Amino acid sequence: MKSNLVSRLVYEFPSVQCFLRGVTGGTITDVDKLQDRRTDMMTQTLPSKPHGTSRTPPSGPTPWLWTVDQFNSLGDRGFFEGRRAMLIHGVILEQGPMNPPHRIALELTDAAVRRVFSTGWRVCNQMPLILGQRIDPEPDVAVVAGSPRDGNAHPTTAALVIEISDTTLQYDTTTKVELYAAAAIPEYWVLDINSRTLLIYRDPFTDAARVSTYRTQSTIAATDSVIPLAVAGAIRVADLLP
Amino acid sequence: MTQAANRRSWTRAEYHRLGNLGLFDEQRVELLNGEIYLMSPKNWPHIVACRQAADRLEAVFASVGWLSRQEPLALGEMEPEPDVAIVPGLFESYNDTPTIALFILEVADSSLTHDTTTKLELYSAAGIPEYWVLDLNARTLRVYRDPTTDAAGVATYQIQITLTSTDSVTPLAVTDSIAVADLLP
Image (cartoon, rainbow over all chains, first blue to last red; front, side, top):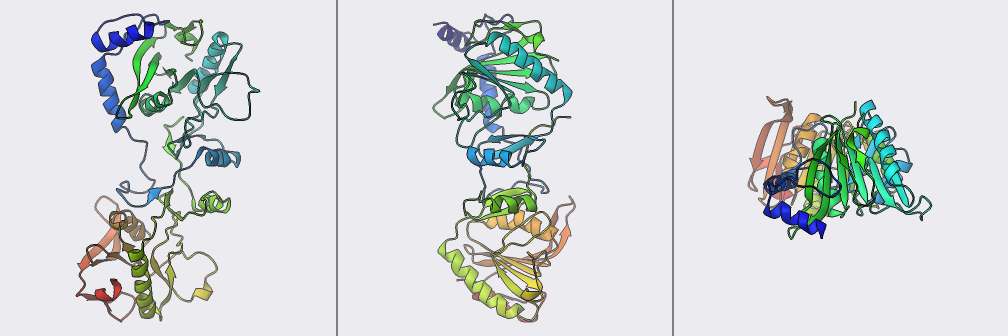
């Protein structure tokens, strides 16, 4: 009921400021801006400039795409030593080692999330989250229902995914939004450690054109708090920031 | 300092290790610009053209080199598999993947753009003196010579000529001329 109300508000009264469940402060992104973001997402491409050439091949041979099993196998064999790797639509992307602000934010976020998600939840840091045969984004934090001893398979969904954004803000707020929405992850947060804000995405949906996004997007400041959809505990944004 | 995520770039050594681990499921791949590509499936016109071209070129280049067909060349950190390459000297004197070629021919069916842009840049950057692209659809032969770099510092060929089926051409390294019609199926 409440989420229907929120959806109606977003579509019918785009400029109304109101309370999202569990969020203090902030404003709902207006629908026009939501549409613009969707357009941005549709034109966003993966970092694709091949090393050493002046332009990407316009057509011709198909890029080799990896499966999750192959990607895991490569990781096990040490191909990604010292680099944080993820698999997005069959393409392996890597980042350099974490810098201190990112690491600090990750530790703080992990601790804060554990305080509200306790028994019956697993808080995973940069571990596999299999969202498709060729998709494993290895999110900074994924909160998964269950216990560590649950089966041998990696989780295929999460109640909440959090990415800590330092230099990856553009990617985290476009390509990853679409990725997590397409996988119907109910709640996705981006902690922007540079502007010291938390972006909250809720209510994933995929339209007729198979474009996925989150219907509700809001930004809250360091002085604000948020209650995750899945549990009744407030997290202060200031507790997540380095 | 953390960097934004970039595509993983593979070296030749890593590419070979991946192949040896059986990760390519016996599919035909090549390594260009640090990225791995699936080679396009070979349809019959492409196969016919490659055989015909190979037979003609092998005879013409017999005194200067040996002919390699869709076999890898080690050009820096890349490992393309050109349709035809002429490698200087005797086959027996090589004990590893050749790092040079006198001449390369690519038969273009669906891959014309790729062959005349990405591969052109790759082969000219590697200093391959002569590169031909046989365009099966337009029934022309593109001849590229004189590897150089353009004003933007991008590798290319200084001389670029398109020949039709009534033309003939003598490759740089030999004295025999070849009729374009002899290469087209």
